Length: 290
Image 1 (spheres, rainbow, N blue to C red):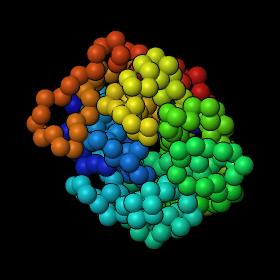
Image 2: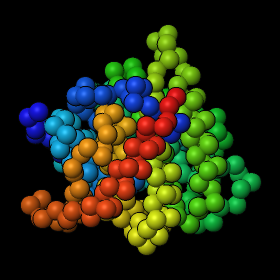
Image 3: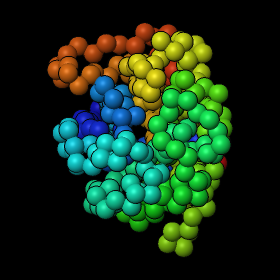
Image 4: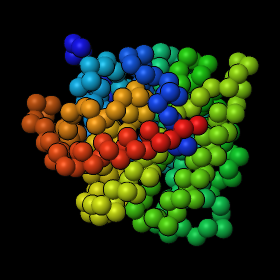
């Protein structure tokens, strides 16, 4: 298959099975990454995502709502105190809704709140921003985003935020809340029918990786992954959005930081590490289903 040029415009849990992935083959053209620094930190997740797609001969365009980079749209979540999409005030912001409606996106990748917002108020969580918001308010906010995506002709992809490495004990409870959010979105009727939502379990992949590489080998700081972690997230998104087996994809390039020139040499992931990441991603994808 002839390799197609990719337009790297920028920035972007039950798991989806092979048959349930909405954008197999080359059906997806434009992907919108909605969220805060989970997508944009140190060069972002879109670079490895697009790298995997390009290597597979698939044409994708990755777009961000951020205001600082090429093809940005000026909707910075810093305006809301770095609060993700499940805050009602963010989910109802007309700038975000208009961006979804006007962009012709085949899918929109969203993240929900992190541990401090999703867990009940009585749970004492150290070193985490924000306060608890009732599940139903989170659900209603994400539901508004989901409805807008579907009515605009796209599909919702819910990315399970990996979370802070200092909050490992809450990994499973938060993942269970994501499962509830995922189920709730899929139960919504829009236009008289339900619509599939892809759940990407990055939270579990990162937990596996910390056990293998240690915190210092995976996290750049408590809230953000290093280049290897961002490569892994890009690999996971590629797999869940295309249904392609990443083990058959030879891409191993680490993302460049924003302060590096575009023509800077790309550092390659050691083959052993790339093989492990691809195998773990495929394990989750191929054994999941909803």
